[in-house]
Length: 344
Image 1: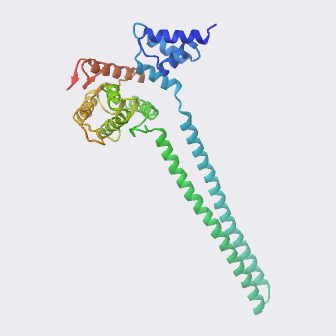
Image 2: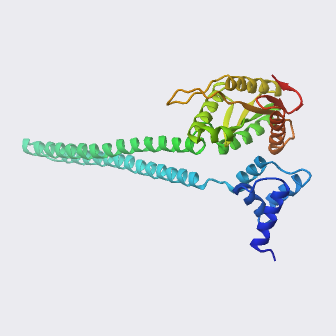
Image 3: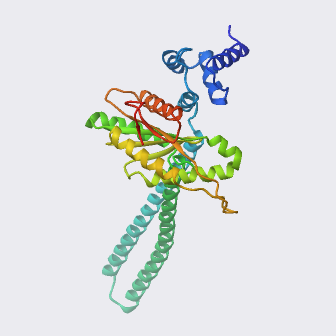
């Protein structure tokens, strides 16, 4: 019988054999694997990795995101807003029904009074009495409808506000707070749909995986606040170099992923090169002192999807190209089709 200590030791031993730091994400993935509680996770690890072909830290991060990061708080928040919207809509229907009922009642009363008027003598007193009752009924109905209409207007306004709030919450649930790019959740949804469309239409699409060079050193030198500003700047440059149909996402830390529909490998590499050059040539300065602190660079790996390829295999191809870009000196773009050729 496996104990928690045995499982923990196996997980740590394997991470050590793979020369990987025991980060919370990496440890959680290996612990779950050796615990045997998640058959799909274990099958993925056993078929893809070994001591001869170990995973990278980023690959384990992706496995962690896939199996252990459902983001329930966002889902619960959206469900709560959606329920509120349904409840308000039900209330709106009730008010509309009340208005209709009020109008119907008024019509019935008028017909009754008119019938009474036809059946009585035409003396002035009788007619005046009937007209007075009709005026009183009209006044009462108008006041009642004003109240109902006020409630109806308020309900419609509240539904509009709830709808806007729901839309903002949905956007927030899929947006990285710091960079304002898409987050991993939105990227995964986008890529799944993109692959489905590409299989149906037999069209190319590509991804670009980028990683800021020596970002940890930059953070240690200038602090995380300046590092956050750099991340926001890089995100802004990326966003300024893609089209509306494309999607840029912060994939974690200093890593970015760009999905490019209807784009070949060469076209995607050109986009990556434009981004790389603009980032490398953008001088940085501290906001308070305006002191220049040089610049940052970024490396990119580019891969094109082909029919029958899985999304994981596509990312592995882009990751391999990114690794080659780092190994070859950083601040460059490498295409997955031939890791030794680069766009310079």
